Length: 79
Image 1 (spheres, rainbow, N blue to C red):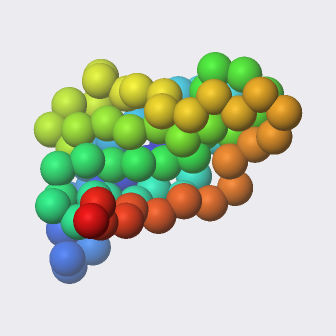
Image 2: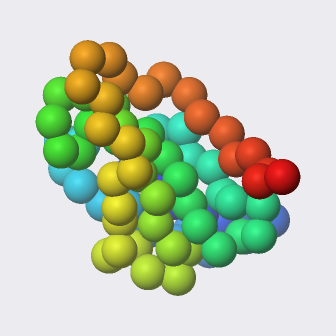
């Protein structure tokens, strides 16, 4: 499960909740609107998922790694 908290480390807010699922390496987009993270929620491989910070029910898988797994990622500006 992934949580967010206020700057004082208070008021935890549940972002993802899935038993038996490994969600890891959360990263909030530079504009603060999206959360991206790596998860094995759909199969044995770790893939990249994105969801709006305002709606934890709208989780979208954005990679489909056929022969490997996603290990890291970052947000990059589009030129």
